[in-house]
Image (cartoon, rainbow, N blue to C red; front, side, top):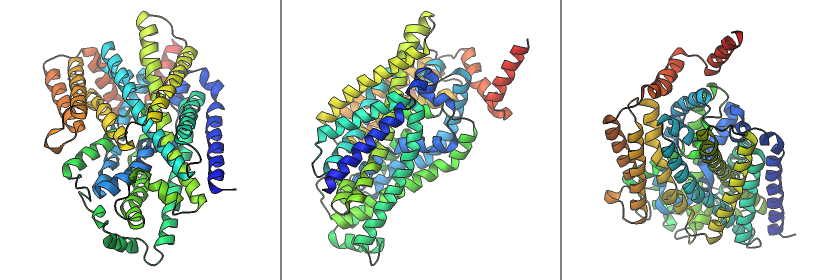
Length: 517
């Protein structure tokens, strides 16, 4: 039997396994929106680390990062700004976790709407976050589709590959919600790291048996690709300004992208954040180091200069330069990175649509009692709708995978960063300031992304964040914050943090006192 047929069958079996894994908890997640969207806020430290890390990495890490390094030089590695931002996740995430435990927050909009006491602001944030989630999800599936075509030597058409990938991802979330997503992410994290190491070891031993990486670098000097190890690199596009922009993208992805934001609410205890303070930066080093080796050393040494389709570097190395088994597990690795990010983002979109738009505006604002089962049902219907929209986009494939990530998602997700940080750490941050900052930041991002070239070599993301932050601060200084907001989001949370008490113990003590009365 041909290797392409075996690989195709393997993909099919793996897809069935993912769907089964999701639907095995379909009944239990149907009963509770809390269980469906937050896994009952009970993820242990290792699972939280794995699901957060691999959701940040995405297919962009496995395919886009080696491609970016090959095209722009080692400076592209700056997009791993998450090694520093991971510490932000711990600091910011802990305060958000406390707020989530105290006030029942599930999504970014839950927090932003309540902190800035504005239903209109919450609806606005919901709309644009959901809107820009779709392109990034599409990027994951485009990468999977391209890889399947290359790995199966065209036996599986692109449209079929992306259709299967989209349906599998959607059904997995519809079946099991956050719990299934988190546990599958944990498996995918281990699979992805193991696959990267296996691929590197095989390629190094096969093509550079005498000197390993040193031999590969010597070949790069001979074939004209040695500039890849420098910055700005062969295309001359990555100077220090580009590195700052790229690093900001990585940092923002580790803190306030919707699916990562939601993970701050699902930890089982504050011990999660203590362990992630060292484990999360370490996970970046462990996973990104093999990716850099592939893009900066192995690919240029083996493929030489001017490779026509750099987005397919990993797929080509896995199929044309490695045996079928390596090709298959590399494809599974891409599934691991792509599926883990896609399902997390789609789940966050579903949560915002069902809880922040449907539940809040149809039930809570009208004083009606909500039905948890109905919220989950609505969330699943949203997932089906998003699946159809995503299918159309990935079938048309209007841009390269890196364009999906940096031009259509990251600059826009970033616009909730100032409101998030100032809302957590500055008592003066007001509703008017948050609205002025977020709206102006989005407008700047749109103009500099689609109509005008960003000035002075900085990206649209950088300029939008600067304008957003300045307006938030200036307008907030000219307006007032209600005392109850300050007490709820600063005085209360600070007292919990500085007392050193677990929030759950405080809550349990309060409930016990009430019951005794």
